Length: 447
Image (cartoon, rainbow, N blue to C red; front, top):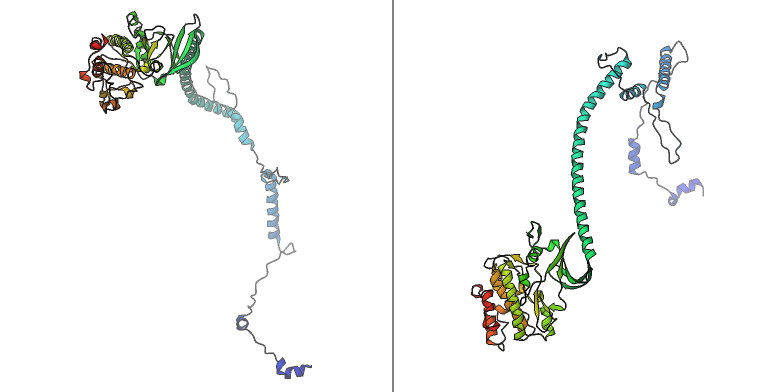
């Protein structure tokens, strides 16, 4: 198909349309009018035309070369980057600063005492004199402080040495006590434990005497120290047991306290060495071996011994405060039971009619007035003896003060009338109506 026919055929007629955007753009496009700008002046090759420019350029080059000659070390010298090296800036150290540093440590000039040195006109001499003067001023400022510091350090060091020596002496004494104890006794086994210590069965090496060793932690000692009679302050339990060495207390017919043979202050512990009767056992286990209860005749013997010993303690103003079946030993070497009183850990010094605001014995066996916040040594001891007798004559009868006050514990009606009356006297809920210890000895049941 030729060109003319294609144009005549409407099928192949193409209408060219321009988009409004293109039309708009075309209308807005304008060609800027060239502005004539002066061409930058080129330096002329002629020497006559550009002498000032050439002179200025040469002057700059000369200045640059002069700067490179004077301060070549201020330029950063790139080093080869191998992961370990970096660009390092080399700094120059002027000679003047080095000279000043040298003058500071210059040796002082020796001058005559009669003729003081005169300042020299030379620079070097003036520098030395000036350095010497400054050094003297620094010594005047620094030396007094050093002397003061030295005195302080010496005093503190002396105090430290004194404290160290005292601690060493005390430590040596404690070690000596421990060595002495271990050299005299051999511990075998533990057979008892209380609220303030543990008791071990031991032997004395010299004669194989059986003894009881009681270990008490100092932090658990409840009472203050007391005078042992020789002006030495010792724990209260030790002081009280030393007072009980009187022979009158250890006579027949009494529940004599076990004797204190020796004691040691070892570090954090107090060690008591006491006699150990063999064979023996505490009253609590002794009752069990007898079938859970004792007969009245045997109970009378034990109770009489306890009352007599309680009277001896009362005469010496010693308040045991914790008399119970666990703290009573029964020697079983004969048919007649022999009672011994032990454990003075919570005992104290007090008169029988004094009023105490604190009860330190076993709470379950405390007298009724202890729940009101007070107690008296005499009436409390009588109550505790009544508790011991109740657990002795009642089958497996563990006593509780609260249960007794509430009526849950009753006195056995099968006991003799004298025994029941003895119970009523000891376990009277009113502390004022309880009898004295001497009155108990005269009671019909004990005759």
